[in-house]
Image (cartoon, rainbow, N blue to C red; front, top):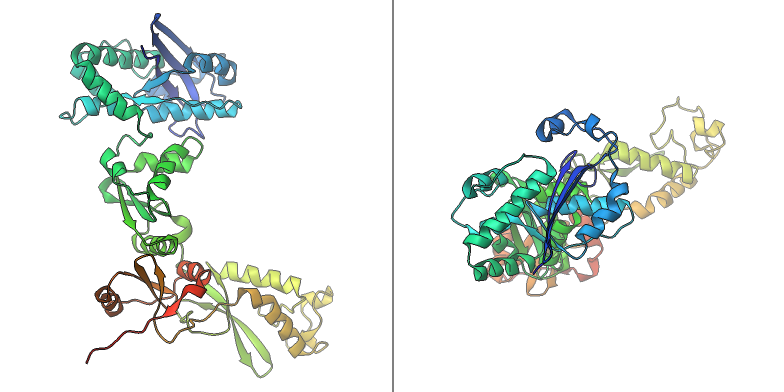
Length: 456
């Protein structure tokens, strides 16, 4: 007989890395029989009014109860070596794993989700939440949203299927569920089955097909599954996995194609969880222009200049503030005059503030030759210099069976035939893209000029 632990938790919220357990209910089932245990838990943080109304557990009720650290060893011994059975098991498992982790205990267990089990055994029914199971199977309710009472309901459901469903059907369902990695309850398992162990990008969609996240990997399946196990330690991953309703993927010829495709899709779809890549609205650069007195410094914006073909641009910054901060740091490192480089306003012929502090060598008042000052300015900016597009037209990178088409540091798309190439060329939008530029700069040696045969 399998050793089972039917578990339910009450918590202060839905995020395992931030919220805490307020009550634990466990029912142990094995060859010796059935044992029940429960305890309120002092979460060491306040319970919100909403959570209190939902569970009936108040701050006063848990004030003098044991903390999880006081119960950890006992709970661990009860659960050790057993299959953890819970309704939406990923939630309870995530909280237990995170709580044990805080006490320096590495807890892991096989989990069986009764939501997924009900779906597999009763596929014709649309709903499988606990209230629905109570009504459908006539389960006896001693309480709701209390840990032991809900654990008892899960145990009753288990006993009900043992009495009404053939054992071979149950065992087949258990084999399928226990043999799979844990996935969000809203995800159709066929979506996981269809994921390849190959390079490419994957797309998570939420309700109403809202784009949530675009990611890339050399192994799509492995990377997607990592999202669904990482949620026990990351609030972001927990939030993301709870919202996912649909998964798509696009295979690429290799890692470069996956990186470029990810950047392009993030720009196009603006997924809610890809904040780092999608913020590109105020992209700007430090620009040097030659004047009679010497080099002039300006902040140039991507919507006003073609960053791919304009020379003397330095750095790709998300905002003017970020650009000026970088320029200030360079001025400090190289003893530059802040008045000359536009960071400080002074009257002509007057010393800048840095000169008075002996941090400027005096180019502002003629104590230093402007040529020497400008040489240090160029040296300081040197590592930030933007490389102009090195070809007269489009170029490509060969990766696997794909040709990745690039023009002016913009990714046009991938092609597997000459027809694909012409289609991409005819509809191309070769606007400079910060993320694509950074990806391609690391692989510049692989870029080859594209030469198309024009048939007259």
